[in-house]
Image (cartoon, rainbow, N blue to C red):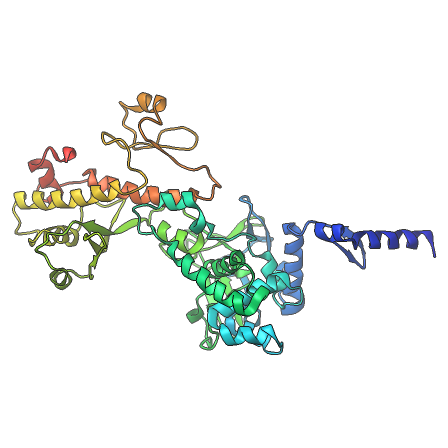
Length: 486
């Protein structure tokens, strides 16, 4: 045997040892390679090869590629210019991963796979398939599943600090669903054993599905899919609120295109190609569905207000008088959903909200006929409710002023000018909230909670532009000059 061949054989035996396998070594016909299993470049190359060899999708010909972004994740990037009216990315329908595809893939297998088909269906069956396929090289979607985020994309649901930030917001208690999921996974684990993976695996699959899947109803002839669709390549695009995207889902291909509008801008080589996950999505929707928030999101709003209810007012009477049905809370208060939400650009609270404030106190309200004193009284009730909502949040601070401190130590807009120096010296004693640093698991939850608080704060402190003396808030200024002391 030639010396070179002996050396190659020794290397092959070396890299086949348990330690080498643990480090991620493998052999190939071109030579010996040592790599880390978590190397994104290797996974991206395998994913690109899988698209081309199995589904005939040549990303180079498409003019895009998947690569690491500036935030430690992955994104889709243009490799040549993409003009308005041209395709951004496209993939065959056969490449989509659905519950139906998972069922077909396991139909020819026996044993525990048949038991899985008996005890799980729909999206739960798909999650089981994702857990198995991420670890199993023979899985038809293995390169794609390997490319999905390694960690749970909605991990904030199990982060105590993130949940603390959500106190007093509509997302408080969002983690309760995990208890039911844990019970369901335990039952499946008893039947399926290792095929069901760990509870962490279950949440990973569930949350990748919830945060990345495409609506089943958007595709033709999808009635028997049994779930929404995981769409390789297309789901590599990150979200941007201003992204210009046109979806074209046919019977054979699913694609996203750059619309040919007057204001459409082309993508140049090296530009990241974005998708818009949901139109006009507020941070509550983004956090709950995708695990991130957009700072200063213009679509943020407060669409419900919680009132103390007069004992003589029945819930049935409120239901009959309000456009949306109210909800009685466990502590006796009543939650009023709003058709016209409170926003950061609100000029005046709606008559709907003012009437709700009157109704829960046993009175009615009509803007045009109400006296200025009546308007001021109704606003007093509303502001009292909003301030109570503020006090239940994570931003309950010193009663004389509101203050926020960024992670860098700089004061936010809530700090009064007079108190700035004193605040810098006495952060702890004044109970100032400090936002988590960027990249921290609880940062997105804190940003959402801050936006929710800011809207409440702006309305509750009567800090609204363009108040007229004839409107309700104008009457507050005129008749209740001591409202700030309430």
